[in-house]
Length: 257
Image 1 (cartoon, rainbow, N blue to C red):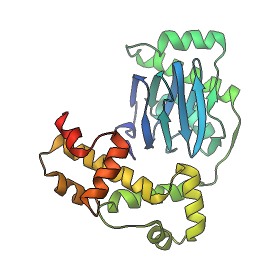
Image 2 (spheres, one colour):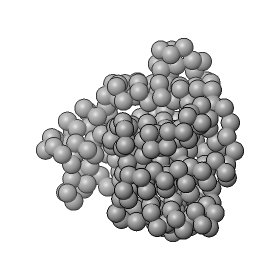
Image 3 (cartoon, rainbow, N blue to C red):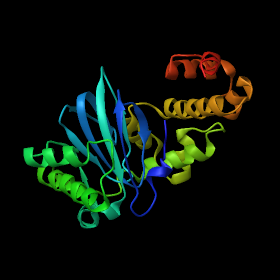
Image 4 (tube, one colour):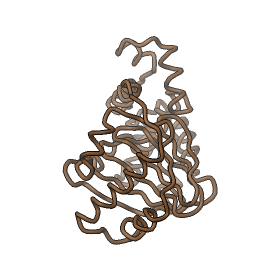
């Protein structure tokens, strides 16, 4: 689980593309665009709290700073390309204050053949060919989906996530955040659940468990120390949350490294 992907938030001509088998990513966001193609199988894209099922041949475009996640019900093979706005400058200008209620679309046959030859490959194309292909994909997006004006509808989510990243080691609650930013608690709670389909405590524990998982991999620290420094009040809670997220206890996870 990565809340903010810094490597996908870099500046000019930042591009990377990978294939993923049985694609699984927890909620994350970044400053670049994300183009997705379901090569085979079925993958569920969750965008700003809404699920969209993608099957073979479906494409989707995620805008900068939109919260999104992926999960695979059975099996999937997915291509994901992340690119900075300067690759498609005119498109970026046109959609900068827009959003779509459904980011999934199908490409016309001739465009699909071109994108398959240029993008859905292991090797990265040259700069000008890459720009051409990304513009072609964005053109299909504009042709196939409906856009509407956004009104900072996700700003409070970014505030919550930023606060959680900075304070996850402490005992924090959604009430604390509501008070800090001047939101009515029950409104904030409803909106949070709409976006994440879980309560704040659950998301906080998932984030803490992921931080602990990283330390289990990269340090030799005692598990009890890792639990406490990751914000868990007790080793028992840490074990329960970690087991639910990974299918293993922290000890079992470390022993498999």
